[in-house]
Amino acid sequence: MQVGCPDGRDAGRGGKDDVLGRERMDFLLLLPHNTRVVREVDGTHAGAAASPHRYFKMAAEDRALRLKGYAAYRFGSHEPARNEASATAMFLDFFEALLAKHPFTVP
Image (tube, rainbow, N blue to C red; front, side, top):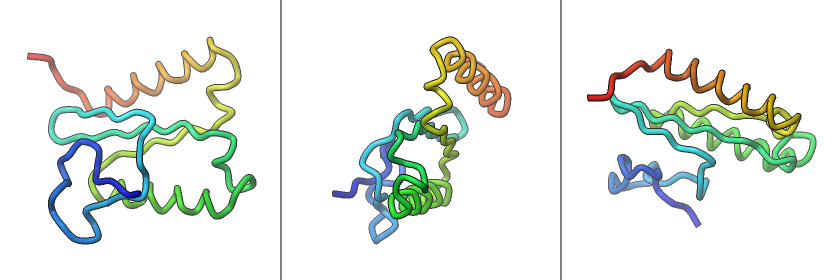
């Protein structure tokens, strides 16, 4: 099953480009100025060593997301699994850098 982009901004345009291969995203952040950020954390199944076919399919889906205007950020399965404190620090650092790159003010 294929679905359109999860925020609906690309839905209904028709044609093959109206759908993406992925059915869900780990985290979708919609920022002002049409900034759409996808954060993915891969499971142990996702690496090229585990399944080259699945890895190449995910890489193609990431490219399709980028072409549709999404910023896709992927984390390996072992990055957040180290321990809770280091995973929390890693994600805090990531989101601080992300929001520094895409600053906005809340009205």
